[in-house]
Length: 70
Image (cartoon, rainbow, N blue to C red; front, side, top):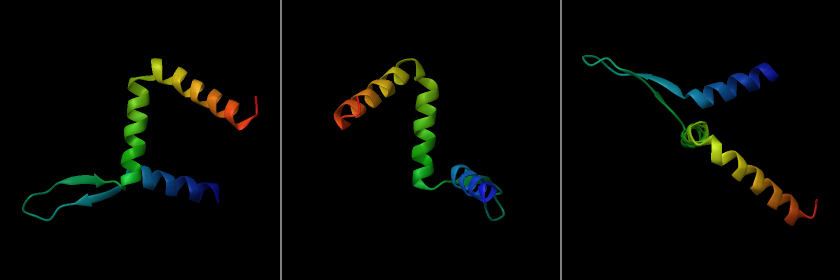
């Protein structure tokens, strides 16, 4: 079951490979809009992790505080 879930997530994240018709041959990946959003978020996080990580921790702390768990 976990192998199937992993395959579905990988296929969703990588997108569907398309091949164009001749005479122009091209191969590209067409991603779902949610996959494009995930790619944008991950690319942003990898580029700006130095200030984004403390921001995420602060948001999690605020969420816990307002939920009454802290």
